[in-house]
Image (cartoon, rainbow, N blue to C red; front, top):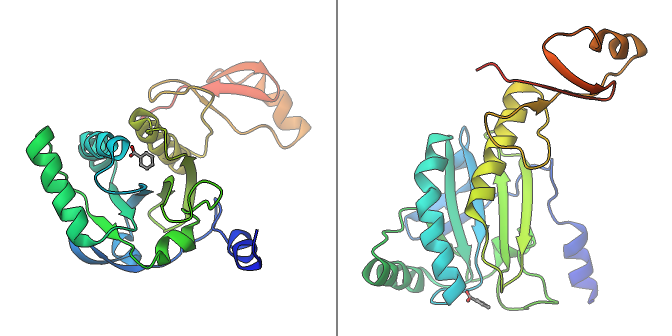
Length: 220
Ligand code: BEZ
């Protein structure tokens, strides 16, 4: 690994960090990260326009876009292709697959955003962004990061589930267990004192499996 690559890797954004700022050119004109303040944002990269897996993903991202909007969540794509290439590709998707891509796509020709967000993994490709997903909250803090390789299309149900889980945690100060789906019980924070551990046993709202593991229904 070169010294420059090592330095970039060391400064990559992580969960809990403020999302790196950007001002970019997109298929919807110029956009800045701060334009999204007050909304959640799913920022995702794809390797290249006019490639097969990416095309299936764009159709699938468009399919979940209305659900994301209902969650006060915007969608923003990115690759190192030009705006003209993005336009030609989304027009082709509409013509061949009957799906109109409604979310903006960043033309990151100089790889500025891709580098800041660590979307290029040189061991896999030095020229293309991999399949990264950054979930950024309404205060512009990174809440989750997913990376998939070039060859594996992402699971859109998981992306929607992840946004719902993160928002549930943000709104109710709870955690979500493995394979959690909206409507299922959530995990309450473990007790921080012996007294809390004892009180828990008598809390009728809780399903107590043991003093450190308890679940409850969420009241809307
Ligand atoms: C694809 O979208 O099919 C793809 C793009 C880049 C590398 C490998 C696959």
